[in-house]
Image: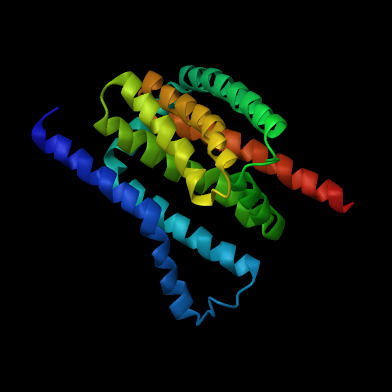
Length: 234
C-alpha cells in the first residue's frame, strides 16, 4: 500500500469515528426548523430524531466509500451464495459463543440483561417501526462500515484486524452504559459477534457479507422482540 493511500485510509477512519461519536449533532437542524423543545419531547419524537441522525451518518459513510461500495456490491450480488454461506457459518459460531457467554453472565452475576439490550428494548416498546428500521438497516450499515470496513483498510494483519475490530465493537456496546463491574463482562458476547463479523469481512473480502449477516441478526432479534411485546399485550 502506498503512502498516499495509507493516509487516505487513516483520514477516513478518523472521519468515520468522528461521525460515530458526534454525528448525532445533526439533529439541531430539525430541532431548529420545527421549533422542537428538546427538553420536553415524546419518546417517538426522540427516536425519530435518532433515526434522522443515523440516516445522516449512514449517508456520509456511503459518500466517503461510494466507489468501493459500488464495486463490492456488484461482487456480492454476483457471488451471493458463496458469500452468504461463509457469512452464515461464521455468524452461527459467533451467535453460539454470544448465547453461551450471556447465559453464564446472567447465571453467575446479578445482571439479567445487558444495558445495551435494555436500551434497544426501550426503543422497541416506544416506537417499534422506528426501532425496526434503526436496528435492522441503519445500525448494521453504520457499524460495519466503521468497525469492519475502515478498520480493515488500516490493519492489514488478519488476526490483529479481527481482534481489534471485535474488541472495539464489543467495548463500545458496553462501556457507554457501565453501571457495575460485571457490565464489563458483556464485552465478551458482543466482542464474539464482532469477531465473527470481522472474520466474515476478511474471509470474503467484501463488506456487504458482514452487512448482510449483521442486518439478518438484528432483524431476527428485533422481530422476535416486537412479536413478544405484542403477545404480552394480548
